[in-house]
Image (cartoon, rainbow over all chains, first blue to last red):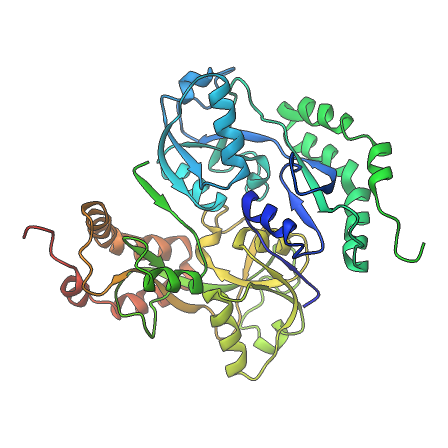
Length: 215
Length: 215
């Protein structure tokens, strides 16, 4: 096996970073407290409200958040960064979603949405394989997308293995193309991607990039 | 919250059953050893070989397993029932897959397939949202599909909560329709679904169904 990828929620990943268990982490948002890490943004990670394709709100413009709170709502499990970001937005507006279910994976949530069990908030990336015309639709809701960025994360000062180093360099090289491609796939959201890209300028990212072993 | 669903791999679920942590489990195949459980089949769960849509083997008939072993192959993590069933089939034919990657979720594996990182074996259900014409294609490989069935599982003798009881009765009621619908979606595989359905006859399933509390 040349490489292994574990998919976990945010809390679990923070535990693994603290225990220094892996070479490199991909996180949906940079950690904002300890453990002390280097975090390099490399792709947009917008969270959007999703509904079944035939839902009456599909196609409506600037839907108020309170309207979403009137629908049954599906949440990720405790420990999920998507769950935390979603609940934070509702709290800021002093609105409480009507949570009908907690599901432990994005895939299960998409199936529940299509099965008419409720709306949910997930990363736009979960729709990549179905594309913009699949069975799950995006709603235009006030306050959304919640703009986050995918980050490459590793413990501060850690010497990266050659494989991790190569992966990191590759990700940063293709990064501009990822912002561009996301913008082409979802033109309604492109303005948001461009804005976040500027907050992660090449200079800062270059500076944070560790030198290769032996240089 | 009315209900919560946790998605875990087979080993983790067997641990949770032993610890009697939940009301009811949905498993991709019935446990074949301890812990002692009731297990009711309710839907077909075929494992199939997946490839990117533009792979040269797409459309070929009765591809030998040895041909698959020549391609880079992506496996689920240790503890996964899909991984175990896949490796068992290769072992039976004394063929070793060329494992290039281990990924901890079906969704990650589908993305890796589309990204041309290798072939893999997954449950046909992972293609439900994209349908038969999505970016992931099914290969016609000798020995496949590996026919398994989704089971509702609970510890033997356990008194089910009313919600779990209702869910179980509902699943068994819609079960015949699930075999039929899978057969319509994937006509090439329909014969396999019909065969397994007969191994789970209504009589046995009825007998195993616990009586409602108070009856």
